[in-house]
Length: 165
Ligand code: MG
Image (cartoon, rainbow, N blue to C red; front, side):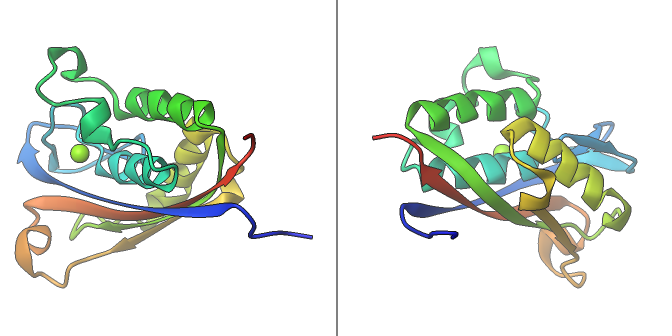
């Protein structure tokens, strides 16, 4: 019988600016786009928000605390490397991810065709079955920085269970 005993929930949010001449990487997947996300790393808002949700569920320091953007060591680093390192901390704290859900807030490009690939990529990095990862995409109805294609944001929720004392 499934149990919710010891189940913990974390939330994560991130937003990055879009600029021309940058690759758009979301959930570890490179997506054709006129603009890509600006960031100290590859700017993958999806992985950043999910990483923060997983860390938050374990009451661990957030992604900015663990990997400061003032540290040249992390310049240009792939976000999946940061996520893998965060996962080592999650495991060391005795937690196992149970499921992940996220909403990508992007006016364009249309992400429908990439949601499955993103879920597979995220599941592979986190090390959980793909059917426990869900990716949704929403436009911002033309409003604000997301709506004007100047930024992409992501809201994420993750649950973890304690696997050791
Ligand atoms: Mg970020």
